[in-house]
Every structure is written in structure tokens, then in C-alpha cells.
Amino acid sequence: MSEKRKINKGISRRRFLQGAAMAAAAAGGLVTDAGQARAASPAPAKSTTYSADICIIGAAGGGLIAAVSAAEAGAKKILVLEKMKNTGGTTAGIGGLFGIESPVQKRLGIHETADFCFKHHMDMTNWYCDGKLVRKWMCMSGDMIRWLEEKGVEFDNVIAFTGPGLVRAYHMTKGSTGKNIVNALLKNCSEKGVEILTETRATRLLTDSSGTVTGVLATRGDEELRISAKAVILATGSISSNDALKGRFYPGQDMSNVHIMAEAYSHATGDGLIMAEEIGAASTHISTLFIGPHGHGWNEQTGVLVRRPHLVKINRNGERFVDESISVNRNWGWMMSMAVDRQPDKVCYAIMDEAMLHGFQKNKKIYAPYEAMGMREGDTDETAWLDTIDKDIKDEEKLGRIKIADNW
Image (cartoon, rainbow, N blue to C red):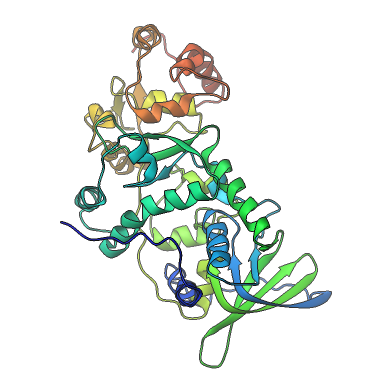
């Protein structure tokens, strides 16, 4: 499969505004419960009117990138609303960024293609996801890395996240990749005159009689903000902290033993999706990426340990249910998580003896790139977490997450 791709150094103001208007409708296409009731709010003490070329809801990766891009495309008055006290959202916590055919890969002599990655991804997901969207994402991902570098982000490493034989596409910086990206984008926003209002929550999309989005209604403390805008972009993130929405998209699923990676971020409540759906946005399904198993409590060190192929995995019935070696397999590692998801209560137990643990500590071997997540701040050795894993295990035992027995 081959496709000619043109690298866009910029984008016209007309094209950007058209895209932004479409984004307001398309981004909301994940919510299916129209007319979800809102809690009654007290009348605001005062009301303020704003006007903007573009109003962006959400000041994390998506929103900040949209703001800088809009300024580069010629938009003069750009307003970003962020309901939290701090900007950055989930983006600030990411460890790396996917990119194919990027300038960083070329500098490092890494030869990967979007054609191969697209076919591999779609084959592995049985074409369950939107092929056009995936194709567009992959073909533009390398250009996004280039664009971020132009904005001051310094990528210095590209790894294969899940296994040594997989595509090297996970772009990282020195220090916190997520924070470095957010800080670079905030600097560009400041230089380009983008206005960011924190602790300001968007509550409703405003429309005219034809249904066209004309602005946003928001609150900041006891103040109501009525914002008119030529285009509105929704960049509010996931639904991971909204139990009602999770229940709707995963009906009948017991989520008590499922940990969603973004769940730690209380702001991820699907606000943009709800607002878009209230004005008639279309709905679709949500596909799921399984990663694990993880130790409850999200201890990175024991979480890495339980995924090692040497540990026998059994379910609550004491039955072995999976080939443990797939956790480090170049193509099929994610299937371990799917297997756990099908077990009673979505739980498995990883069994290890003392000799096995001491062998890990003696050999100091890394079995998959993701094991670097066990590193603590200040560590320079990817296996340093093994030196203190005994203490982690004892700490987890005190919390009831690990059982230490005298015999099998």
C-alpha cells in the first residue's frame, strides 16, 4: 500500500476555521444519552460577555496545540477555557508520544513507515477501529513530532514500547516528556497572545436557530461567562472519571477491578462530550486498549514484576488461563490483558517463589521496554527498581495486595 503524503508547513486561516467548526460536532460523537440532567445551579452573581475568533475548551495537549495552530493560521483572538487550577491535564503525565516517519527517527537512523504501521495496527485490532481515522493519525503523526520540535520540544530517544521487535515509534524527551510538551506549548501560547482562563468551566454550547454553534456558556467562581465565537473546539479529554458514562459505554461490566490509566485525573469527566451530545452530536462506539495485568494500588515496581513471563498466572478458581510468554511477545503482548479481562471478577494472581525473585535481582535483565516504568526519579539504571523490590513487596503485603506464604 502506498500513499503520497504532503507535509503541511502551515494551514490557512480559512481551512483552520472550517476544521475547527467541524471538530466541535465530531468530537462530541461519543455520548449516547441525550438530555442528561444537570444539577440545578444557583444564579450567578454577575455575568460577563466575551467574544473570540476561536474558543477552545480544555488546556491540555489537544487544546494547547489547537490554540498555537490557530494563532499560526491567523486567528487574532483565541480564548482557552480550563476548569482546573492548572493546565496540562493528562498530557502532563505521559511518558512518550507516538510518531511515524518523524525527523527524530530519521536522525536516529530508524526506518519505519506509516504504511506498515497502519496495516499492522488494523490487523491486530481486527479492523474494529475507524480505518480512515487511524490512517490519517499515522500519516500525520511524524509531522506532529516535527511541529512540536519547532515549538521547542527536544525529543532525544525513540523506543519500541512493548517489545524489542516492535516498531520504534515511542518518542521521549529528557525528563518528563508530558511536562516538557505542555511547557513548550504554554510558552508559545504566551508569545502568540493566547488568553487562557483557568478555573473556568464550560457548561453549555450556544447555538443559533439553525443549530450552528455560536459560542460557549461558562462559569468562573460566582461569575457567568457568555462567550461568542466564530468556532468552538472541544478538547476536554476522556470519560475515565465519569461513572455514568463508563456504565453507558460498558453496560453490564463490573469495573471494580478495572483501573483506567487516566482515572487518577478527576477532571476527565467527559464534559465536552456531554455538551456536544446535548446539541445533537452523533454517537459511536468506544474501542478499548487493554494493558496489564497491574497490581492494585498502581505500584509501578510490583506492576512491572507481575507481568514478567516467569510468574505463573492463575484466576480465582486456581486455573492457569494464559501463555505467560505473550507478555513480552513482539505482537501479542496486549492479549494477556484481554485474557485477564475474561476471568472471574477480572482478576488474576501471579505466583513467584523466592528463588525466582533472587534470580531476577542477580541477572538484572530487562524483558521489555515498558519495564523502565519501574524506574524511580533519579535512577539511571533501568533495573534499579529490582534492588528495592523486596521492600515494595513487603509494603504491598501490609496493604493486603500481596500474599507471602511459607509454602505453595
